[in-house]
Length: 370
Image 1 (cartoon, helix red, strand yellow):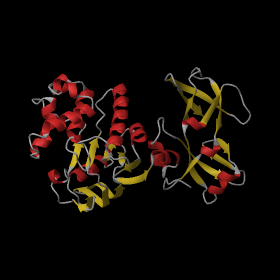
Image 2: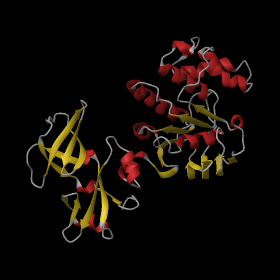
Image 3: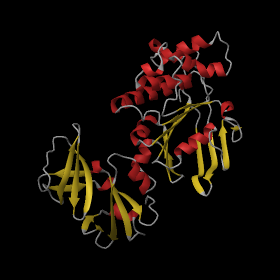
Image 4: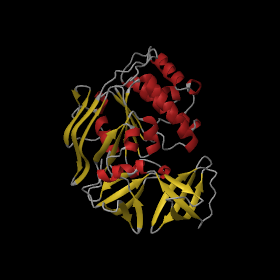
């Protein structure tokens, strides 16, 4: 990871470790045995649906929630009992949390004043971080005079000016409109590259996780499901939940039985012929879940050899691509196609599958069959 090259904004880069961390709210288990090591200078995204434990995990690191069991370390320092103000972390909230009666300059300077940084140093540090984030012309405005994107930059500036060991970000882009979210996402990624500060970022948006993170920690029901690079999680999901959560549209799933003698997979009346390499992975399984991503399903308006007939349920044209929802027997699947494809509802098409991209999951546990 790159270290900062910006004079006056040099981070004290630290690794972060969750060692068997548990959080309980009475009898409710919020986080269950979280083991996670975030390398110094790494950008890690905690990803999962609402209620999965990702924000709770972030708040325990910040010291805003207590740890029921297990240990949290920042660098080599055990911080379970360390007050939030002494952990040297900076948190950026979804709501920005700016002081409305203060100017932008005063908001950015506030954490320096609280830490009793010499008054003579504060204006220079505020100016440097404001220039870094392109808000130096806004320093005398108040939050109500700013757009959502500008407020988010002020919140980031307030975190950066402290030169913390770790940045913690709780869905910081969720209040921005779609175009601004994409732009700010790119700015945030470049900023973290320049600063090199260890960053833990919480989101439910898998596009943010895929584009921002060095590694992604996928959580579900309080448990860590997979911790890997975005591309490895996308191409080799550890279980059916991860496979369905990563990707938009999500992966198609078919539950069926394997007929090893006939070399087929039969799902609700559909029959797919499988090659020997695929079947060799499935020797010990009689029932499984087949997963295939929308981009690995081919659609043709002309009947083709080996093609499987399906009926168009609805199409969604997005300009650069088209999603086609299809009735395939008693199943519905989604395909991603070229935008020039024009299909009427009810039209018959023929499908082909990229067998090398099939994913199989154990019917009982949902774990990926390697």
